[in-house]
Length: 246
Image (cartoon, helix red, strand yellow):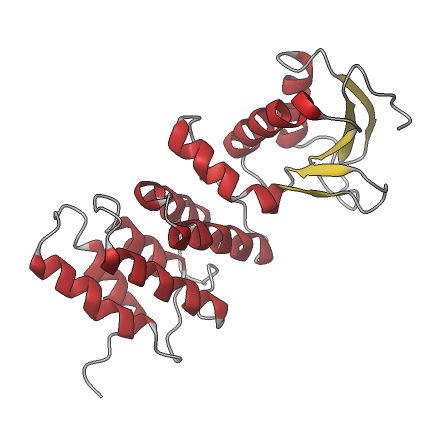
């Protein structure tokens, strides 16, 4: 059956590759980790996957990297990842580091799938994505487009209307995502958009930092759009050439 590593050992083994360039020993380690990640009894937490992906950030997206990312995706599919733990570890920072570690590989479908799954898992556990995307360079925009299905969806309350859901995002992520998607949306918009910055069930939904982010976008670079009405947790934004009653 061979040696079986625990979650901490897997994370540490991959973390140790962070300053190493491509070589036969490195490829051997990557190859050896795939069957370890494929074990049905394996359970990873935030620190484990954060350490593991951190070790890949200086590598090229070769065959072994892609196989390893596929193994991570399959592990998440079978319920082998939980960000939350009782240890004194910042799960949102682990998520942020995990997403950043995927940046060199984000053009591959395996890395894009893993970024989506990490984001979805975090939201499922009611975690904030923290400063998962700190800047607005080209690589970060690729990552945001990967996460697009999790942020830009359908407002089921109003037929034919989209919504941009920034609830649960960090200040930095909400600002970057809002700017990127509003730019894309208003260029071809034919109907209003609902921007969600909180939940109506939250007593302070109108007082959170995400509302301040949206208000800043509304008063600066997107001031030419029609904003309102402002409701508890959301606002409607309408292009100048579209009726608010659309």
